[in-house]
Length: 300
Length: 300
Image (cartoon, rainbow over all chains, first blue to last red; front, side):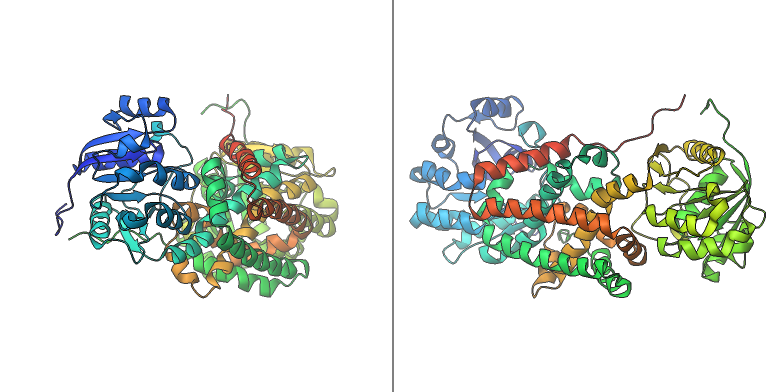
């Protein structure tokens, strides 16, 4: 596909976290011809080795700091709770020319960590949240197509360097993503509603059913509606523990609104108020039937 | 496919309700060569006409009673709240040899209506709940494959005639379904947990988000997780109003358990109890990752 701008070609990607998200990013960058060399580091040496054997990374680094050495682009693909420690581990080798991004599902906590740790180099950091994933984790599920056609939210702050934001925008666009920019605060409020709360609900539903005397029998009877509704309950526990806690304020507020709405429906149900109940369901049904995932605008 | 038993060939299906579920049943029976003639009735004459034009039914009946005249099999595919009125409309032409079924998502209310109205002929009625559907309704979406490979729950009562239960079992099996038998009570408890509650939650989630100041912007940012989680929110409002009210006792009990589980997760989140939260998410994730839709056993 022809593009009207030239995405940067990077010399070296320092990949910190060679799991599903990080590994897929490396594969996508390589396939798009946007990087010459990928140096990877994972907390578990066996993961790093696996990533090299699979061709996801070219060189294994023995530490996060050494993965960053010589890199002009760095991706943190670690649980959001590990972000601050990772910034600390790498800050001595960050230069003003390094583009640093993350792929975390929460942004205020990540931006706060970047301010605290990176200080004068905070402008190199372009916080990113690609709206994609799988219910399975690990480098063995890494997929060069994971990001194509998806939304990527960038949440720059006032000190973000224009040049790094532009490089990040061009890079994700070159991977086929629809790039959207907003503040970390707006991001966290929105995703509390449309992602973090649905996950919390799905976890609660599964545990609520499985904990009942006949829970296993009930689950054996569930059909396609349940399958799709509960799919996200299979998500990675460590990752989601971090997200739910990192964004707890917005999440608990969204959960409060949800429970209020649920209880007002319950009142109509227990009172047998069929017409009003139908009207509420009609609203929900109409909203959902007219909803579509935003997809990237066609590139020129 | 060879089967070890001979499914009954029916002379005439009296179809009451020519929508998605009823129309698909007629098409499936015709394709399987299990019925000679389909006489259909819908509340709206334009639906009945449409069904005939599409070849879903062969003859339009001007009333439910006349659809049943001469039928050896009758399917009620109407909203569950219309079941009792439909039984009243047809009872004078029901004979002990008529197999009557429904496709409703709740069973205790339907069985109660059958007892009250059909009286001595209640044995002809085999309550059925096929675990299938679409988010779109109407005869234009009727599909001969709608039932293939799906579960069908039959909830006979002590007075159900053995012969009708056997005919029903053979018929659904011949359509490629996995037939499961249980009591109406057990059915309603199970589906309150794995179907009615997820729908109620999905309706509440959509309305809770859409009702917020920035709700539309939030929805525009939602991704694939939200898409699957909220799919059932687009379901038919009339149908779901009836289901939620008809099964309200079991549903509200399941909703209570769910909210209790949700609130205990919220406590862990607000307290920052990462390890315990991860353990709970791990339970949910494990349960969901090991769950599969039951599929029909291979036929001999």
